[in-house]
Length: 523
Image (cartoon, rainbow, N blue to C red; front, side):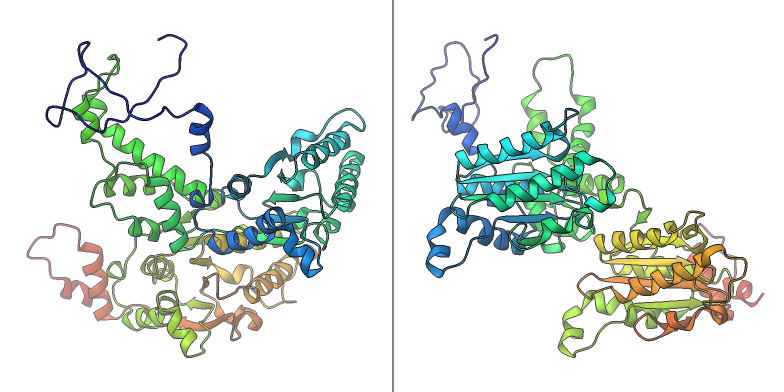
């Protein structure tokens, strides 16, 4: 019927048989009342069950938002003012807006969304007026939640902004948040990817009382998110979501949603040769035969990577221990230093041991330093970020240090992660020894590197591997315990190692029977 909505029916019984064809003379009996459009829309509303991977953060948010809106008498009876604001921060796609909508739907509160850039106006005073109207509207419809997305765009640090409008908007926001009465039942939620860009006056008690990190979910959290996104998908029986979760280090909720969509599209692509696009309908047998399999997920994984790390080349290496010939002692040492803390963190916690933060590979060029770093990242199922030392140095003052900070931030976001610095001697020479270095850029980069390595926590497993041919010129501060505390020499291969290298390199190649690898290793 032209211009009318399509109506969906659920078949609960057919007579006779399992299959039937609906023809003009088929009798259809409807049971129960049809669902009203408003009820249908309500069924599709977001709830707490639609948000995964943020269980701890969700508990905090419910405590700070749901309690003041639903049971304000609790705070009144104990004699404290309920919180007025919460700041959610984390990488793009981690679910900040989704959480705010879910809270609003579950509490039944009026939800007022302010997209930061949208309230800006070219007319003087109109931007502040838009902000005032939003708060007035929220107070009229209390209990309500005001959600300011991309809050850093309207509330930057006043001392760093050149525009007068931005300063006035920050002042207006501060005044409005101070003017919220504790009995008004209005909660302000802000979301940003850059919490350090926000004016400090907003981040004090009485305004944004609590700051909650909506970070990259861990493996359990990723499993929850995958279950949510695949609950309506037709999956093959052998699909192993746990394996998919293990392969998606550094993926936020939006990345996992994109991964599921890509896997489904891969399934559709396979059936394109049996689908006639000119037909109005698709054969029921084709539709019934479609199901997303493990292979579809693996193909989707190959074409996607975490959105927060798309600027940096992050790879999950496919190099295993079998690809490395010889170096058995080095492999064993690396397993103890890197692999065990990632795979068995509870053992280290039980014995009160803190795992090593980094190792330094040194030895002649071409002996397998980079290959070893890739292999350990693969064996730990960790992401791998490779940085060439000289790449960090730029001509702009302060830019090199900022790049070091950015790399470490991205490594923490994609944890567990192996951060590999090749040619480390180019940026970590002994301080004060560099000549002709304008402004001491190399010294500042090294200082930033030392600071970042001290700032790494055990909760975010990031392991640093440095490689150099010149360990004698590296600053001793970098080699002390707690930084690159393990020095591993990668020697030139002996005869036995040469044999293992030949074996590893040729294991996938067809070799004639008269080829003697032992004889080759002697040369």
